[in-house]
Amino acid sequence: MSNPTLTLLGRSLAAGGAAGLVTGLFSLLLAEPVMDRAIVLEEARSAKAEAAEHAHAAAGAVADHHEELFSRGQQHFGLVVTAIVAGLAMGALFAVAYALVHRRTGFLVRAWPRALAFCAAAFVAVALLPGLRYPAAPPGVGDANTVGERQQLWLAAVVIGILGMLLAWQVYVRLAGRAEPLRHGAVFLTGAATLAVLFLLPDNPDEVPVPAALLWDFRVLSLGSQLLLWVVFAAVFGGLGLRAAARAGAPARAQDLAAGASVAPVK
Image (cartoon, rainbow, N blue to C red; front, side):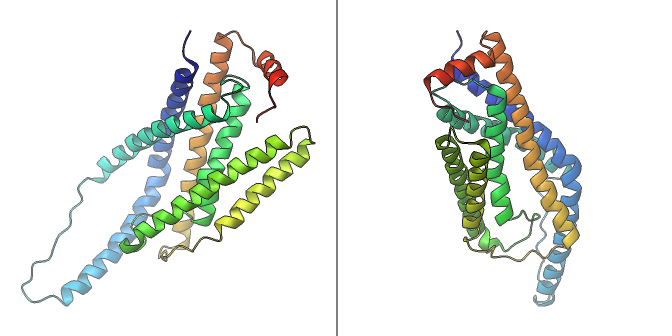
């Protein structure tokens, strides 16, 4: 008999790899043209800055020329590879979190709805809520001296988002037996309170000198890629879970009844 933990890890890695591949192709086809537009604007700003520096340079001074280490074609290929690697890493972390939450009731119990719920919570925690507080900005935007500060703010937002979703899950579990509208309303209020806490964090220290239309397109596509990532992950992870449950000869309904007889329901 196969090890349930290793099987869970395999499902998560397969889902992460598939989600990373799809997201990478999505970014390559839709987000990269927007990225290219942003790069053109950034290069124009850099050219103006360099021209100003050269105007004040001493006569005969040699100007520094910065060449790209990788061509745009190589960067596009690297984008897809990086997305796959990131998806695999995400799958490994997802497996650990899923195992901790559902270790008592088994990993194949209610495989499909749990996959959807878990991935939805992950999307809200690590993408939606932090993205609402600190929307994505095109590459090259922002002062290089504030990179560390911006990274710390984003990390803090992600941590708060994860803690908020854990609190929402605990609220839902502890209200077991109550009416579903009450439980769902409590979860919504917990999410809203988490978002309010996020807005207590300091504002982004840098301005975003990008045309509004370009900035909107970039932010929508960035959030859309994250949504696509978790949708594909949930579909693959949940589908593999259903297949594993069928192969194990343990129909989801029978597992639900067995689990419900011994432990409190965990969503």
